[in-house]
Image 1 (cartoon, rainbow, N blue to C red):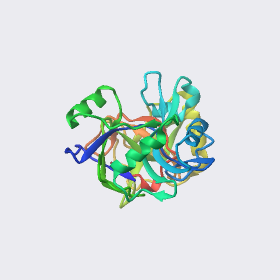
Image 2: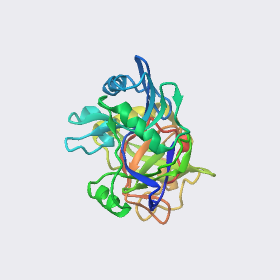
Image 3: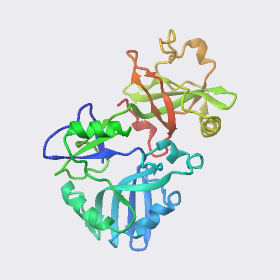
Image 4: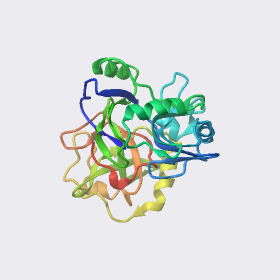
Length: 307
């Protein structure tokens, strides 16, 4: 179940509010002495996060399915998506799992029960496991948003207390407010450089196909440029996948791609997804001051839309 992106959070006693974590969404699936950690695309993450799997064995249940987020925390407790992506470059970060929903418990399917009942059961199941609980944020919406923004965190999610769990749906019973502009984009090409990738060309899908959103040069260090190049190389194609390139002229912010510049680019099959932070969308529908945060193995390219 996913949340709808909104510009303003709903208010009222029928809602609870939680932090939006900057990590990988995952399910912990426990069956007696067997535990698996599964991504949103059903990729097995168990071997990548053995500490979380070990904590899953300590859940107070014979069988359980717990929904939550894998997060990398720094020494101050702040999440970092880049640290989660590149753990070797961020040795001081701790990998944790924040649980926020319980979908199955000891043979009983819970998705048809209200959220508050599921959360009450979840608290008992998590006790003593070492897995963290996503706590309800107290106060008014304005106070919550101000506090979360002041901590530099990604956003807030509002959930109806009586909401049922709708697998695979982006429901308005869950709504998320992002406090910094970032989302996933499909990689359609890149400009090669001496260290691998000089700039990524990214976009999103609409009814017409893959639309160009901008060039991304910031956020890279040399080893990242080489790693991304290595990931993209098997996907090389000869034709541009963007339906709206080339453009007649470069934009004010230099994020357009003209016919002459097309010859500098290496196109790739639009299958890989990157997380991008940016200042704003321009009037031309381009990303201003975009920066690369990391690759998203947990997102399907075909599902990427402009948020």
